[in-house]
Image (cartoon, rainbow, N blue to C red):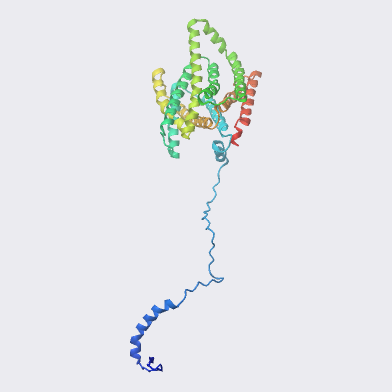
Length: 396
């Protein structure tokens, strides 16, 4: 039961009236009272602030730190670390890559001299090496996701590099077949000098006195070494005898001129390799471009100018192995030219001649002499000077 009353009269007196309700009636009116109280209650209550105590979660106003995912460290072999450092981890990387290229070419020479069991024509050998280089460079670029054909400007440089490079290769093959081997090698080692001169003309690289002195010192060592070899093997005597007859003399002079053309085109090719590698940001692209042209051209020359020789399994295996090594040498050569000045990088190439002479003296295949030792010493001193003082100080 509930009761309530309120009334007023006209004379200002208040009277109270008592109203009695049953429980059923109060239950029926409870819903309306509850609904009305729900509508009134929010208007009367105040918003309570959340209570904070020592057990509540504290939230910092600072920005949340990024989630750090710890990856288990994998062991990297010292060889991988050294190759990574040599490829792009030091200011000496360009010169180190050139030294690797020279060492690999020296190893190719040693394997060719000591393990060749079958006489293979030079163009056929060049065809196998160029084909292996083409396949490996294509796989390399596909593996790293590099586009095979880039922009128009690098493509023109790559075409010129391929044409000039193959002209240098074919000229050297023609030269080495018609003049004494030592003289042909000596002419081929004039390529670093012509490359430095062409870099001054084409790429506008400055030639410093120290760089000119390093090239002169290295080539002087080459002259001392091969002067001993030519006199020992009788190469100069044979050339003089051949020059006594007009036909023989003109033939050797013509072959020597072809060798000079090979050296000049080789120097131009170095400049084009540097320009194309820096434009495309990938030195292997220059190797691929050369293989695309040189492989079919060498195959055509094999059947056109020489008699094809079917190699045995042993000879073919050796040719493939030398092709892989040639590919690595070309890649390191392109990388070295990409990173370093040509006048400095080309001087390191003389290491191959010094190592070849020291190997011959060590294995008793070449008679030791004071001149050879002096020539090797001059080359090693010049290359060491370039390796130590060669990189530009501004790179530091």
